[in-house]
Amino acid sequence: MAQMEEIKPNAKVMIVDDSRLSADLLRQIIQPMGYTVAIAYDGQSALRMIEQEKPDLILLDIMMPHIDGFELCERLKGDERTRLIPIIMITALSDLSDKVKGIEVGADDFVTKPFNDTILFARIKSLLKTKYLNEELENAEMVITSLALSIEAKDPYAEGHCERLSVYSSGLAKHLGIPDEFIKALKRAAMLHDIGKIGIPDSILLKPGPLSAEEWQIMRMHPIIGERICKPLHSLAVTLPIIRHHHEKWNGTGYPDGLQGEAVPITARILQVVDVFDALTTNRPYRTAMSKEDALKTLTLEAGKGWWDREITEEFVKVIRAGKL
Image (cartoon, rainbow, N blue to C red; front, side, top):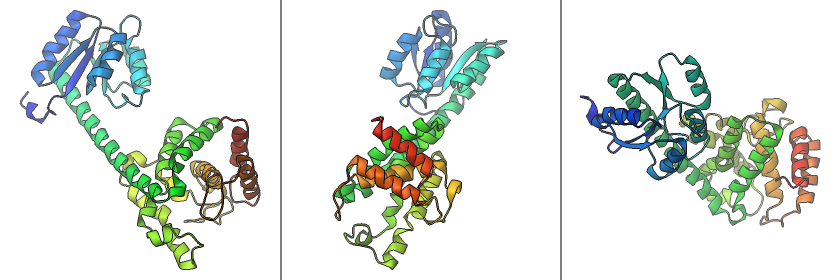
């Protein structure tokens, strides 16, 4: 209790337990630790209260009617709005199977009955520190995303480009059976892939005509600059290869590293295809937008030249023609 001054002010712990006796016992343990306590007595009520109360941490009993602790945990961890809330599941001492299942649905920690006050306090404090750190990282990521969107805002012809790439790339990735972790990375990369253009002078970035050889050399630096900007954020580790390599080509003639074939990360190959399609179907200072069908034909022709991954291009053509994206 001597370390209570380190607790974040007004940190809120929610107890979810259908036993009023158990919930009240936990409340009596937790409140003297300096936390605000909210209680829900069933899973359905908990879902409503979590939306209203926005707790910093949840102590969750497993055995409850209707929505049990496992289902509630899985729902919360699967929701972007609540996935960062630490969940400590309450188990009986011998229930190893409960702990295994709890891990599978995303529980962050476990406490066993009867409760040890010191251990409970230490686990709550540790998980809250992790939560606050994750929130700070997400806030930093939001700042970087805002910077990236400011680049888009400079070019009236690029309005909505990042959002469209997010839809196209994640949809194509799902169609291809890409794991969720990489789909999430693609959504981030759609917003951040051109953030390195912050380091490119506007005289080059917004030049209406062709770039000179020297200007083009500077422009080709933007994937490297973008990777450098995003590298300090560990949450973007899976996104970094997409940012760096989204201008590589299947035949090795791209930049910045001249990677060839499958050496180009598949996520970067996906973003390449949808990026080109969006560019072709958007008005530019030097030409009007192509129709979707003409853009697909051009994309297919370029894949035949060895610029893009032919299989990914073919699958993208299928989903666009089928109206799935």
